[in-house]
Amino acid sequence: MGFLYALYIIPILGFLIFLHELGHFVMARRAGVLVEEFGFGLPPRIWGIKRGDTIYSINALPIGGFVRVKGEDGKTFDGDSMQSKTAGQRAQFLAAGSIMNFVTAFIIVILIVAFQGQTSSNVYITEVVPNSPAAAAGWQMGDRIVAAGGETVDNADNLGPLTEDFAGQELPVTVVRAGQEIQTTVVPRADPPAGEGRTGIALSGFRIADIEVSETPADSAAAAAGLQDGDVITAVDDVQVTNYMAYAGYIRNHAGQSVDITVKRDGDPVTIPLTVPADVPENDPPLGEGLVQNLKFENIPVSQIPGESVSLFASTIQQMGQGLLSLIRGETPLDDLAGPIGMGQLTSEVISESSLPLWVTIANLMFILSLNLGLLNLLPLPALDGGRLFFVAIEVLRGGRRVSPEKEGMVHFVGMVLLLTLMLGIAFLDVERLISGNSLLE
Image 1 (cartoon, one colour):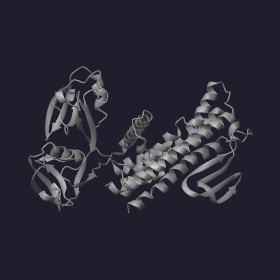
Image 2: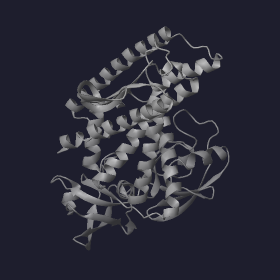
Image 3: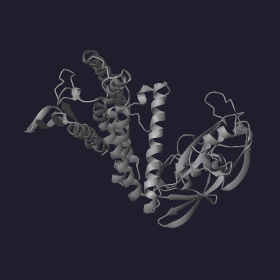
Image 4: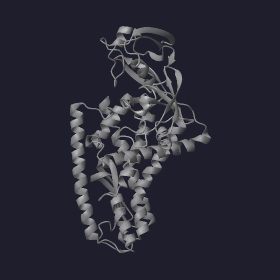
């Protein structure tokens, strides 16, 4: 079934790229540019029909589409060619595809927020560096940060600006450990060591969810204690379990000790006593069991949908921007990149592991991919829309003097060759990842 899930990427990418090209098509027509062909899919052509001066075609490769306009080769300056238009008109044409992707992504995120609702998150400490301000404050892995400097912390990004504002000063922080609030004070470093941050911690946000046992291998501590498939873990030692970290963090902090796990089984509460193994794994479920997070969503008042949608849209773009910078700086390995094959694998893995309805999972994938498509095409790289926009910007800065079409065409040709080479390399990595059985979600 996972293979069939991977096939969803074909209509998803096809639809998003088609909308991208539709943006170019509409803007070309508005500028009075002759559109020679508007194709669905990529050549070779299967079918086509001419309406006016434009061929509308269906092509063999069902991923995306293309718009071929008069003068895009830089050799024609007729009145209905792209080359005859102003810098502003050409810039609008080049940016229209990405703008269409951004509009699509925003519509999708509105639908997600309106019909799915929203989740809330808890912020947990997942690592404490020895001899750091966090260690001096007594913070521990698994502590939940609920407030800092008098402000509520409900997102892992909330703490960073506060530690900058309080660099070298005492910052009051409230953490929750084993269900109890603890008031602490930390002094963020003004000049922290590389990679450690001002307080010396790693943070992760975990959304509120029911934690369900999906698998209890016969040789696991979970099976030995009596946990069963389908059990929903509600508490450990009377400490409410609201997400994966609340459960796993508590178990890890009680390695070698006795705890009572409360589960809901067939609608009834059941308490299971067990002794936690001394060697609890750090990155896997603590008792060797399989776990599923069933996220909890809350309905949003209609008046709040626009604001929540804008917030989610903006934060996602910010995260993507940070990811691009990480890639440019060499902090992200190339084998983390994915082409169409890798995106198919990712689609399969996300759908297989998601506890959300299928439409919600696909909508979230389309939201992310539409934003990615829009952002990547605006990068100032040869052969991409952003690279062509770069030449329009040079023209404006030079007072209207264009770079010769031959020189610009050569730059884009070389860029296309390099881009295709990169795509081929990424495809090789995608295939290698599939053969080795590695996951893109790890």
